[in-house]
Amino acid sequence: MAATTESLPARAKRPVSQRAGRWLSNNLIRIYAVFGFTYLFIPVGYTFVYSFNNSGKSNLNWRGFTTDKWANPCGAPDVCNALSNSLKIGLIATAVATVLGTMIAFALARHRFRGRTVTNLTIFLPMATPEVVLGASLLAFFLNVGVPLGFQTIVIAHIMFCISFVVVTVKARLASLDPRLEQAAMDLYADEWQTFRRITFPLVLPGIVAGALLAFSLSFDDFIITNFNSGDVNTFPKFVWVSSLRGIPAQANVIGSAMFFIALFAVLLGQAVTRRRRA
Amino acid sequence: MTVAQGIGVGERQVAGDQGEPSAPEVSRRGRRLTPYLLLLPGLGWLLLFFIVPIATLFSTSTQTRPPGSEIGVYVQTFRWANYVDSLSEYTTQFGRSFLYAFLATGLALAISYPLAYAIAFKSGRWRNLLLVLVIAPFFTSFLLRTIAWKQILADDAWVADGLRRLHLLSQSGHIINSPTAVVLGITYNFLPFMILPIYASLERVDPRFMEAAGDLYSNGITTFRKVTFPLSMPGVVAGTLLTFIPAAGDYVNSALLGNRNTTMVGNAIDSRFLRVVDYPTAAVLSVTLMAAILLLVGLYIRRSGTEELV
Image (cartoon, rainbow over all chains, first blue to last red; front, side, top):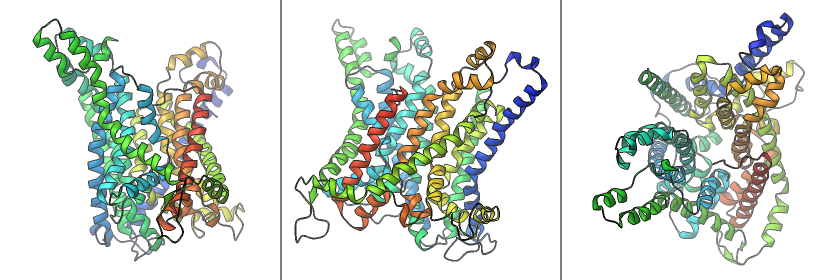
């Protein structure tokens, strides 16, 4: 593995051949990174390009350029119904999982209590269980108890697998906070609630937002668990899966690409805002 | 430990207002209760919709269908032989799942480590943008991206064409519908899960350690081997776990990019449960898959010495 360290003081004195080698190994890793990113983005590019495909039922072969599908993203039957279900499920599951997960993170990071090991294990296990097992076990449970499958069972399942990811994200943020900030607030006669509201919470907020974004993207993109527990309710990934057997309408690519650009824009905007605030 | 009381609770204020000698007692009891109140809703949810379902699944695994009953009706008979029957039927799929997951995890590590290293140490002011780009493919549905691979690796597409021209692929050879395509698809699918933890632990490495190694006449490669890489191990462990676990249970890549001879345990569970309505067999396979993964994860964590993962 070609890897070097930066700013070694001895570097300037080294012979030319060695410096050339260093230059190459420096750039080797950059070249490698370019290839890595290409690998990451080729399928995204394909999805985007094929959203302009003038295709009929199947979108596997190129049939000429058109912007019709972008002008009419709901043109294919059921695609927008599936999308709106996915958005609704994602928003509800994210809201609930973020609240529950943040509470657990605070308990773990800020309190001593019995049963910490059991709690940690209960948080870790859903992440260490393959989705197909999570899906199958929930379906077995719902069948046993007699819960009708549908919108509500999807939401229940999504909250379940999102909680752990929120806990991990928020806990990491809490662990990286400087405890002296809270001590300072207390020294300045803030009571515990004021300290929490004015100091702790604003500082943890980026972690909570990151956890919520993670939860939403996991929920929105989930197929396996949803497929087990959805009954006849359609979600966007389920729509793509079902239609992949018969041929996916290009509208699915339009929605996939649009989600990509919206999310990218939102993340970059968020970064710009935080940078400005810091400046 | 003073900070551990960072977040306040009502009790303390009430106690303060009362100003009675017994107040600290109330406060302490309140404080002892707080963590449990914070944990209750979330852990309750996980208990009801994760632990109980896993127990249900376990109980389903020893059920049998009474003779002459309807499809989908099973009763508990504690038939442990279900495990022998189902596992001997699906040994190949199990082996394949773990083989593909191992290959994909290794490939993902080989791709991700240099990438994470480049982002952490060689990207300068582009670092944040590059990080966003690592997560960005996530936003396009992973099913759509897997279907894109189906197009890219198709027999008449440029990859297969190029390989044929270079005589790396025989004229009648395929990439699509082969184990190669499945492993490539799985590798691709979970790549960000590998890159991000490795990046996170590389970013935390104090550059002064590397400078110190250089001052002690260590060359770049030795510094990497003895200083940087060991310090990034937590990220490598987290990344390999986050890749291996979903990879071993995946069935989407096998279904979309593979053929009849690439089916994994996930495919078997899916078809047994949803199509054949053979719940006990699906349950046996699920329970065994989960147990095998937990065993491997436990051994791996113990060996790598990273206890605190959550």
